[in-house]
Length: 86
Image (cartoon, rainbow, N blue to C red; front, side):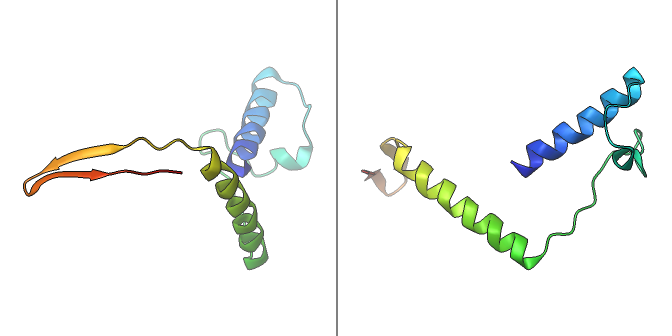
């Protein structure tokens, strides 16, 4: 989500510069370079803890929805079958 937001912000800045419209804050245009786009971000331990909490909720919700197929793999020792059920 943060990655998508950063990309959207950068694209809006580039569009504003190309079109000549100043529909973004002047602070967003400070120290930007279209030839070398990027973002500087400081991520604190509390921010990492927050992202971990949100990420764990997403993973726990998604893992209940996933349908894993039965995988059959042939190896030198013979055939191995790992049934996975949810």
